[in-house]
Length: 423
Ligand code: ACO
Image (cartoon, rainbow, N blue to C red; front, side, top):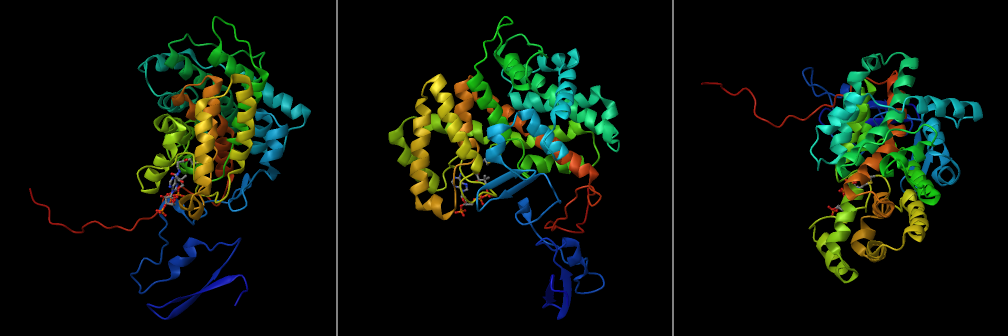
């Protein structure tokens, strides 16, 4: 019997099976041989929400949720956030290494070359109502890009995949900024390729009459926030990108699936939900009453809890420092005081301690975005902009992974069978 194996005894039949254990996992398909008879389909696992199922091998992001560790390609997030630019991080996630000077120059030039979108994209955006949610606009417009680049369907060609990834990195900020302008009823501000990636995005959102005076502290704070969001292994939206991408659709369509998943309040939409929650609480004296409601199951403490982190989210720690720097520039926000006290009370409360519920990346990010001048319904767009390099890297990894096939889970059928049909 091999040391790295699992022996399973099926008490229904008395038979024993030996299943190899590799990287702390067994292959679900190895269970299929466990049958009660010739017409038995074979044993399956039941795992709604993938609570204990690895869906891929990945060399991009490492998380230890118990210890609060996050690494991109092996580099601790704390070091990356301190020293790297967003474009360097995007390169690292996608190519596996930080770029050298020549590689960074080429990567930056490639992205800069593709920042403009076809003017017909503007016509789509103009079709949205004045109060359309920017995430809805973003996912529609990014999905529509596939119609402009039909060559993107050639996903077996590495050079072609690179071009599409560059296009997405380049055009995403432009579309995201256009969504912002649409919501504000402002004319679209076109990309300025003399500016940095972040500088150009900020300019496209805030420039009025062709003028915007950038605040370097706020710009670097935004850049760090995007870096902190850049990848997070097999989260809901990344899983959506991989699942849709597994059908071999073009990357624009796969990424728009990721945007759709991110939109939800249990995922990227949580940063928006935190602000709405802080508004609902309204003042510090109402915090204890709110916590009691949450403990009774009447709503959740948004920005708290995580499927993987069962200790303080390392990104939330870094974001707290960014908040200090940003609020020094913009002045204190009364909602930050509510948030700080809410966190302090929750961290001492048995309900949250027992369930290992700590602030996640979204608890403070919304407050910072608001201080920067972004409206609440735009926060998740900023999250999407940050997460894009991770989605692209995960999509690239998926396409190259010979073990992957079209994602197609099984089910346990619970409905009726063989009913008599009569009209
Ligand atoms: N407030 C109050 N109770 C909570 C919270 C919360 N934020 N999160 C989890 N719980 C409780 C649940 O009610 C449950 O309690 P029970 O055991 O008594 O039934 C227990 O903690 C476990 O919760 P699950 O929902 O099983 O945990 P899961 O891992 O499925 O959910 C999630 C993780 C979705 C992030 C959850 O913690 C949540 O809804 N948080 C609020 C939304 C949020 O901030 N999302 C952003 C996540 S980070 C990101 O996507 C970038």
